[in-house]
Length: 325
Image (cartoon, rainbow, N blue to C red; front, side, top):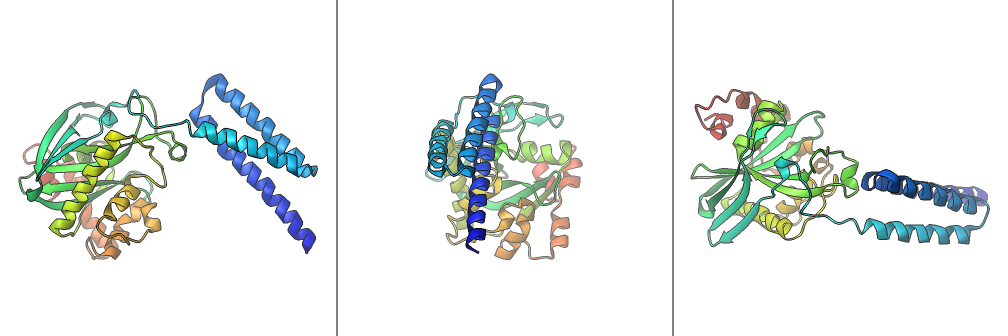
C-alpha cells in the first residue's frame, strides 16, 4: 500500500510538471512570435525534460530547484504583459465609452452608432448623448446566440421616458486583423472594452446582418435598482478609462461582469454555472424572479426579436419595432 501511494505521488508530480509546461507553452505561443517564440519553446522543452529526468533518477532536490527557477522566470515574464489603451484597434472597438456625471445628468461620449451594411462593413459614427437619470425607466437584457445554445453574448439596454435607449456591451478589444479565440481569453491576449451603442447599431447588427438568435427580456427591477445598475456601468466606464484591464474568458466576460455589477444590488447574489454557460442565463434570471416566469420554451419564443429586426424598413424606430410597438 505504501509503495502504491509512493508511485501515485511521483505520478502526480510528473503530471503537475507536464501541466505547467503545457500552460507555459500556450502562453508563449499566444504572446510571442517568430524567432523569439521558437527560442522560448526550445528552452521550455529543454528545461521540462531536464526536470523530469532529474525527478525520475532520484535527483529530486535538484529537480525542484530547477523547476522553481523556471517558475519564477515564467512568472516574472508573464507579469510584464500588461493591458494597454493605445493599440491599433479594430474600428468597432476602437473607442470605449467615457462618462461624466453632474447631478442628475449623465453625459456619455464615444457611443457607437454605426450604419452597418454587412457583418463586417459599416459607416463609422461616434456620438455623444446626455441622459436625465430622473427619466430612466427600463432595463432590458438582450442575449445573442450565434452557434451553441449554451453560449450567448449579453447586452444590457437602458430606456428613458424621453425615448432614448443606450446599450452597454462588455467586449474583447481586438486589434486590426485579430480574431477572438476562447483560449487566448485565458492568457492576457485581449484587453476588455465597454462599448455603449444605439440599438440601431449593436442589436440590428446581430439580428439583420449576423442573423443571430437575438432575444429581448425585460428585467423587472425597481426604479432605484435600475438607477444603481446604470450607474454601475458608468463607474465601469470610468474605471476602464482610467486603467485598462484584460478580458478573461471565464472571470471577466460579458456575463460575469454584469453579475459583478448586479452584486451592487444584492451582495449575496449566488454564483452559478449558468454565468459561464451564458446561453442559459435567462433560466438563472427566472430563478431569481427578475424576468418572465413563463415556461422556458414559451418565454424564449416570446423573447425572440430576430424576425422583427429583419423587418426593419425605416418607417418606425428600430427600438419600437423590436418591442412590438
